[in-house]
Length: 154
Image 1 (spheres, rainbow, N blue to C red):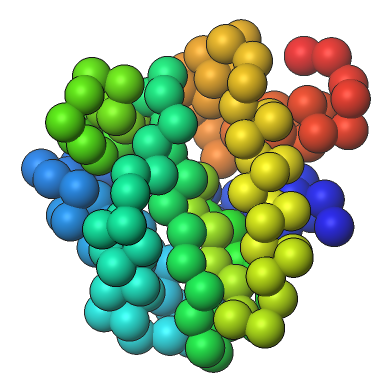
Image 2 (image 1 turned 90 degrees about the vertical axis):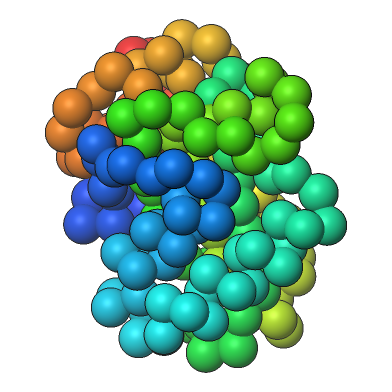
């Protein structure tokens, strides 16, 4: 599995607004729900329950909220970028502008972890994080991820 094959430009949402962690995850859930054919409330509840276990912020303005939900077919990834940083936790390192949301079925824990690992590796580069925060077209964001995960140069 390669994450670049799981990211569809139609599931990349830019210029979003949210006032809190709950508001951000609810917004992303509402945007992702139609393509997943799941109620937004179910997605948001799963993400918030997982977030209650510990922040999914990874620093540099990025977070990878994730959960396992019945009704999800395979790994589903939605990307969202917010206008202003949202507090995902008490420290400044947990202020987030860009989210990689990962959902998976409960019976695929290995693929779930593999997706999280690939995203975390992709986001290690400060240059990649900067580009993801600056690019203004969903297709260009997908291309940045594709180039990085395929070992290409930007």
